[in-house]
Length: 262
Image (cartoon, rainbow, N blue to C red):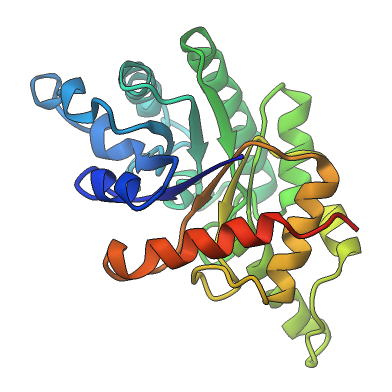
């Protein structure tokens, strides 16, 4: 496995010095640049293996007239390839949100069509696209990880398992059904991750760095082990300065990997 962190370009050198194997940068941070402002040399030797934040929030992916994204996507993927990116996560909750008059179920199918086309664009560059489910507070399209994973699989696209969004959806459901909110079990996570993800984002239920003693994190890692996951895991957490967060978070992450399979 390789362990990275979602950060900015300015933070990338420090993240690598502190022990991250790679960094995951926002794709939109270079995708929106004018051609004259994009300098691939600025990313040299920074192990930018993955990206998040594929689309800027103002860009619509769903509904009539939503076609601006194609030109942007081609440019962004080409730039990602030029700096060594191999994995591009598609979250982009605002961009993929169902607009008024479009049912979320219809929008979800449109979103699958969009990411299928993204993978077709990315494949010649050796890049994999891996959308993630997002919780209901961030978008109304693709909240169910098992549905999204299976729908993506049918069009030959992998998925990102984001522990925070999985746990947020579990917590929201449990608040409605059971005020005691029992901890999520292996059986819940078996349904949420029906097969091996292509990529992983990691944070706890409160979007903080993981703790090796957190039973939710331990259950999540046990399920990854059961699936034979051996890819990239990116820390995507609410945090302060990188130096106050990353060394301890990487240590906890490496301990969690040692959690035995069920």
